[in-house]
Length: 280
Length: 292
Image 1 (cartoon, rainbow over the protein chains, first blue to last red):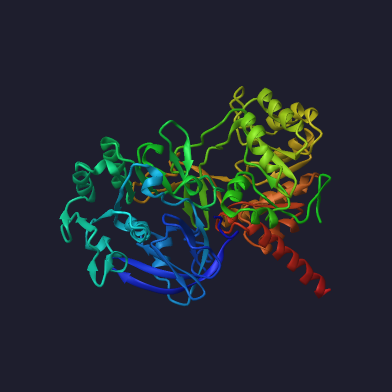
Image 2 (cartoon, helix red, strand yellow):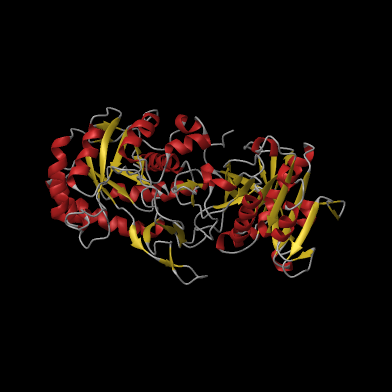
């Protein structure tokens, strides 16, 4: 599947607070539905560099959820304001327009595509990285693939999206377990503590791990999976100017030297296809 | 319909070298890229004699109205380019300009001779923002080095030779004059400006290399001034670039005498920026003629 050539304006249809994050929706009347794990390059039509300042470049944001809409596709994005670009996306109001290019990048593979012997999936999301786990979780559930979802947050201020993306009827979905560093929800500690426990179980070898989160967490996931001989797919992030292979900015080191271009070779990368996940 | 060194182009907007990977873009956008190709000629990434992996991340850093890059010229090397990339680039619906760079005359000669032999290539751009390993001097910062290089390369090819000037000199016009004296058919400018930023979290210089090249609208007034000084002393066609993001911006470069303009950073924000800017230029021209 290819993306429509160029960028297009999409209307903001909603933007709500969720914990410390924002969850906003765009109506995409032209693009194909994204696959789980894909991303878009987003830039507000106004308030984005016209004054000669920042933000200047579009921002690469993974899709948290999508749904068919009356006149296209509804795209949901979970964002945390951490700089001029994400701050502007957080303040989008319904009716505003956003420049959109995408869907871009590759998507998650099913457990059987990764490992023919695999029977199920373990999804590990941290912080804002829980977003692509939501659309992937729904995709797996709809296909009847057994799964566990482990989500971790630093604290209440750095959390969000649970109610909108991982709950049914106001209750956390039964396959989801939580961890928080401050203990405000679930296990007090890292989400990778939960993963470590799971991977020591008898049937761990029959799972494929999918993960998205901060670099230190992804590196812990990658290392844990390697130690237990479990395949994993990591949804990675990198500074990215274009999203379509033009800028060569999003270099990620390969284990044998050289670099991947995350926008066109990723953002989903097998754990054994990258060197140590470094803080970019 | 501009004529550039005998090459007929549909409009005056091309890409800046290293800012558009047409092969990757075709994977992402499909054949729509070819049907509606944004540029009237395509300039390849710079090819070096041997493959290069490029620099360690972090490679890019957003700045006010621009960005700093320290990419490090990743490419497959001459052999890989000729075998794998050139056949793909030959499928583009526009003339192909190949950018080359080496660190001595022998290697530069090898690149130019190899590209000269390929009829898919319409012209060659020399990236001279590199050191000569023998002298240790950046070729494009020294008029004498630039002229000496052109005198070696000029006899090797009948294709138009374009010299890409660096802006990181006190007098770019002196280098342009030297390039012309050495037999260059055209001059393109500007390359990126040396720049650095500070990561507020670590207070360390950014990108990872500590510095890089600044591009985007922030550099446009500098590009215009350098184009002005170069246009005043050269006869060869000029390709103007530096922060062009609209037809009005492009027209500023044309007003100063550029035959073509190149778009770089704006393509990162808008993959079809080249076509949009060409359309805006055409609209501007037809509006101007209506006023007469």
